[in-house]
Length: 337
Image: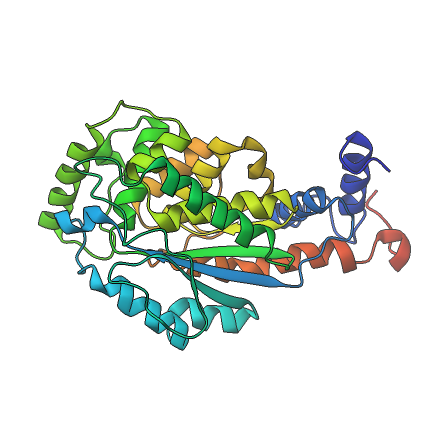
C-alpha cells in the first residue's frame, strides 16, 4: 500500500468510518487519529510513550521591565523542575511522561544541578530593545541542539515546555514579525502584570518592534527577537518531525516556536498537534494565522508545556481508537441503513 498517497488516505478513512460508531461521531478525535496515522504511515498508530522537554533561558529584554517577576526566577524555577516540584513535573507524572530539563542559556552561569542538560548558548539573550537578541551563529547553534534532541527523543510523541522570564515578550515580538499584526493586539499580561504594567510592556515591545521592518522571515525574526529556549524548541520540532514523531505544542510561546519551525520548513506542520488555547490574547491571533485549532481551552497561561501534557490523554485515546476499536465486521454489528 502507498503509505503517503491516495490509496492510504482512502484506507484510513475506511478504517475510521468502519469502526462501531456512526460516521464522524467521534469528531476531532477522528481527525486527530487520521493525522497521527498519516504521520506514522500506519493504520495502527503508536501513542504509547511521551517525552517532555522543558527548555530554560533568560531574555535580555526582561531588564527593561516587561515582567512582573525578576529575572532570577528563571534560575530558581530550573532548580524546581530538576527537584520535581513544578506543575509540569506533576502533570508529566500523572500522564506517564518522562521529563528532561535543558539549560539553553540561563543567566548567572551553569547551575551544576544533577540531571540538568547543560546546552547553554550564552548568558541569556541580548536586549532586543537595543539590537538583535542573538547572533546568527547563536541562533543556528540553538536550532541544531534542538534538532538533535527532538530527533533523538526515542518516544512515540514529544511535548515541549519552556521557562524564561520575559519570554511572552519574545513570543509577542515574533508573532508581530511573522503576522504583521500591531503589537497591541499581541501583548498580554504574561505572568500577571497589572494594567500599568501591561501598558508599559506594550510600549516597550512597540519600541523594540520598530527597530526592524514590519514583517521578517522566520530565521531573521528568531535572531532579532527570540530566546535560546524558543530556538531550541523550534529545532526540536524540526528534529522530531524529521523522524515522523508527533509533537504536542503548548501555548503562546510554544506556538511562536512552532510558527518559526513552520517558516523554516512548512512540512513540519504535519507533525504538530496544537494542544491548548492560551489566555494570552496574542495566542488566538497566532493560531488563526497558522490555521491551528487547539484541542483544549482551559484558561492556562503558565507555560512549561502544561497544556501539552494535559492533552496527551486525548492523543493517546485517538491512537487507541484507530488501533483497538472493533469494526462493524469484526464485532458482527450491523451498519446503519
